[in-house]
Image 1 (cartoon, rainbow, N blue to C red):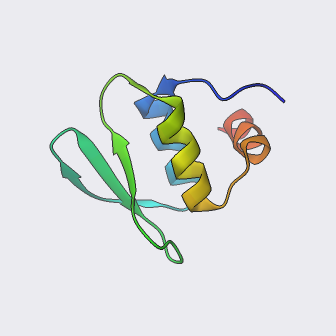
Image 2: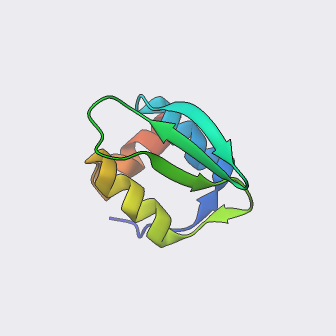
Image 3: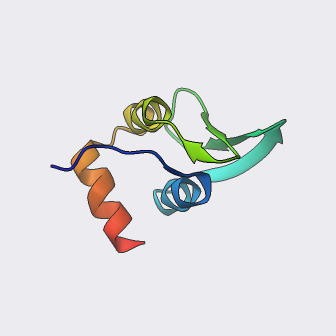
Length: 76
């Protein structure tokens, strides 16, 4: 399995939208996404690259493994 690496925020946004989340609002430099069944919203910085810890935290909230993440990235 390849290691999770930082990605540009636009690429991570495509992933989030692909898995069924929808953009709700923007607060400063952070975009907020929600999906039915999530305990809390996903927060994504809207600038530069997304750090690994943010990607891993959002994957945990979504219930997606890193392997599933890489498979989805190949599709989009």
